[in-house]
Length: 139
Image (cartoon, rainbow, N blue to C red; front, side):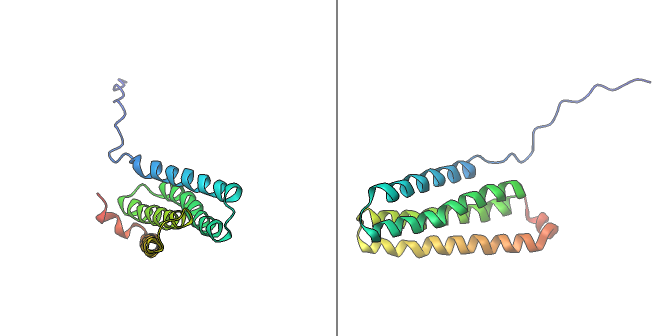
């Protein structure tokens, strides 16, 4: 019996992009830095509350993005995870900027972040419910 030589392993045809996990890590760093600053360096109660609200939204969404990356390596899931990640970043940074003394009109950006988070989670709900039925739309 003759054995055939083993073929070299093929690279993953759809490698996981590093931008999304790197952005999620940056989100975590920002949340931790501002949360620590709020806890130890801000006397103004309203400013501290704004920052802590941002942290409360930002950190769980960072963890969720990593969970989503482990759930399914799919462009459809990645698009929802991006919406969640960018939305939490916009929402939290808006509150952080307000706490740091930015003009009040900056508050108008927070709904854009919240809307992106909602859209991301709704999109991910559709993907989860559809299961493999959406595989034909993935590259």
